[in-house]
Image (cartoon, rainbow, N blue to C red; front, side, top):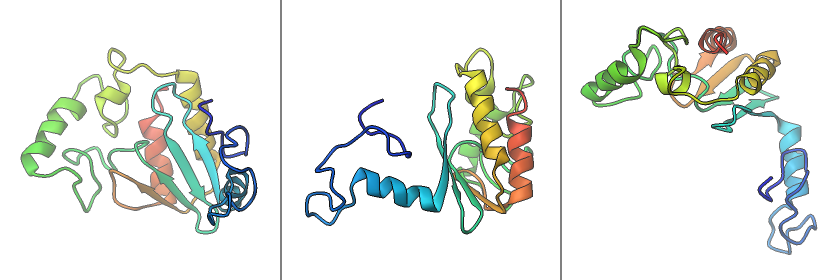
Length: 168
């Protein structure tokens, strides 16, 4: 623990400890944690590498992730979705494709860069990663947002996450 605590209100403290945050109008850690837990489910990816935070916005059924997916289709050149490329200019996306995605030993169905998946490059806690992916997949979500893809429907995102992380 680094003193910040977790979303369950454990640890941290930091500040006045009161609900007003010392009169500044800011919420205390405990109040902010309670508010956050009422709106979202949280998974901190336990891969011993990234610590990516994946959120499920409960009211909208929207999964919010950063690097759990880099592509929504393996035929896309570089990171991106069916409608948009997220690497520009084109030569840069092509370079990323060649360096990170076009490996014969790819085990992510072409959806993740090799530095996340290749056994000689990656160094992750496989059991922790699998547990985290299983937790995310256990959530009911109708929509999904990721940093490197277009917005997706829930079933599409679920299938892509399953395909990308089936190897762990």
